[in-house]
Image (cartoon, rainbow, N blue to C red; front, side, top):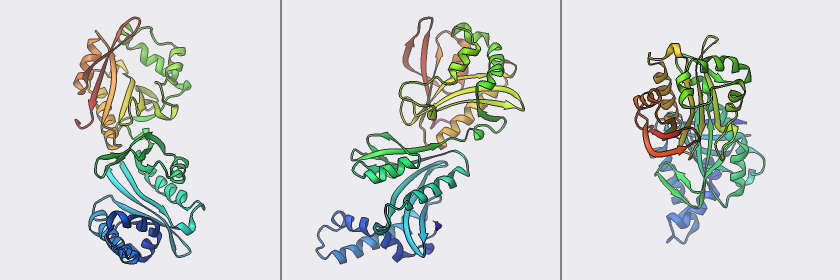
Length: 340
């Protein structure tokens, strides 16, 4: 098995590629050439337009690639990969030759692509899949995709289609969150360090009681908003050697697929007032924007001037929505990631 990463039109075996997409090209005849009665003539025109698009529009764009799986000299599966942002990619035309379906070739090709993208860290991979195409939906889910919307978003034209599902795979490599600190998921074994950091921030807990305990921190490590799973949650620590400098609870895709939610953020008291927390948030927002997210939301307790000042400084603004708790009121705020 050979995987081709095609970035130049000269690398394409035009006849093999058209044979691979023969079924899809025939299905496109009524759409592109409804008035031509001769099917072979119309098919040749569709193929000509296909290849013209690959040569003149698709492959000249930096970051765009055509991936092809070849076995025994035959091109069997292919897809187009578009780079929308630095680490945000869109799939199109995931196809396996009709004579070679149900043998796992499409899965092998998708897994090869995913492994390749993981080598460079975090990424988001999106696709639109017809609600009628059950085999394709299952293929995507087997490779780690999830249905995230009832309307597929075509990121090439920024338009949605109710006939498709929006499917998405997000790989978040938290080690790339910071250029200064070592970042990794926090576990129960880190609770003593987490408790020590929390104890140095009494003002936070004065406004948002009760004070942290080992048990409450253990619960925080697993706490989830409605509709989310642990696959969406990243409770991470920022370490300077063995010292915990900051901790962050991040939920992806909440309250919608284009939004990330910061459930908790705290820095060591000895590091505050030096711009370290702001640098962490700035780097985080940059990473999330590169993954294709549009917004970050969070909340702070009404009347906490330290929190309000910090989040205002980092370009978060009140949404006008509040949430009442027994002992305090939460101010819901957001930052648009176009503002970096």
